[in-house]
Length: 143
Picture 1 (spheres, one colour):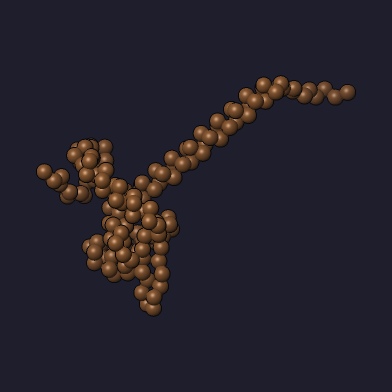
Picture 2 (cartoon, rainbow, N blue to C red; picture 1 turned 90 degrees about the vertical axis):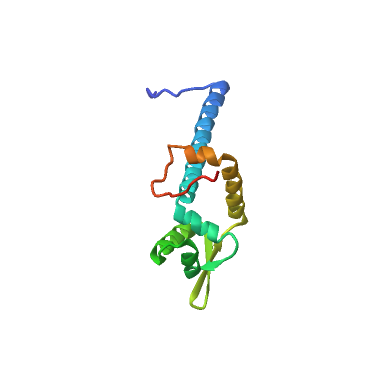
């Protein structure tokens, strides 16, 4: 006979173990969701990327159109467009020599619209927040 002992658990103990494992999995899933959401907001937190998204809110545009509208350099816009494409926030299509970019989903437009409404309501508090100052920003709150 072998010296190996087998642990025997009651149904109640199995249920407890299952609940603990489920809770750990749920916490892991919640952490993954929060991590992805934070990544989304970091992407939106860049003024160049946000200005590109705002520029594309109304209609699709070429890189040259976006450069003119945002006042950013061609290489800067191209780099940020590449990032936005990789993240799936914009899509593109080729027409002859031109590549047209557009927001990839109506929900992005809704997100931008909602952020306008939130900003309208909380502008003073957000402007006054010392935790997220942007040193290069010249934005003054409207009075």
